[in-house]
Length: 174
Image 1 (cartoon, rainbow, N blue to C red):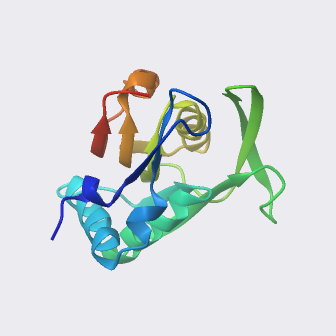
Image 2: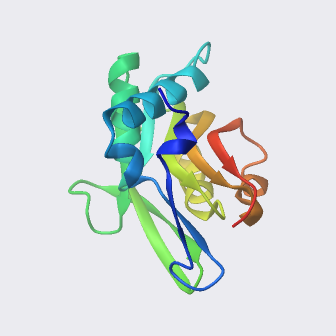
């Protein structure tokens, strides 16, 4: 079996010149790549005491659900504003050009629950920083944050320095 990073297709000069886009969907296209990515995430959680897996829309759903299933834990989705049907709390976070808002159901995290966050990629860390705030607002404790890929040059990990953060693949650039 190939190494996980061998399943990632890198597209130069997308979405603009000088950027190398790391396409996580190429991992999903190969059964072995998907299997390897989920196994790596599960390895990151070996020995971690947690109650629930949380995943942000949409690729956090893709990688978080099989982790929750394999660990026999519940899964909590975090979605873009206006997509969840029950009472929610929300957080705004910065984008490259402007802001966005995410929401979580108000009853999704029970005070005292230990939460693992799973997502495909950490870039600037803004989305996950907002999510940790939501978890803590609901009384949960973030015990681990796991990513398939990390763009270390964007320094997202610095926003999450209070947490245990791990990535299966680390790219030094942006």
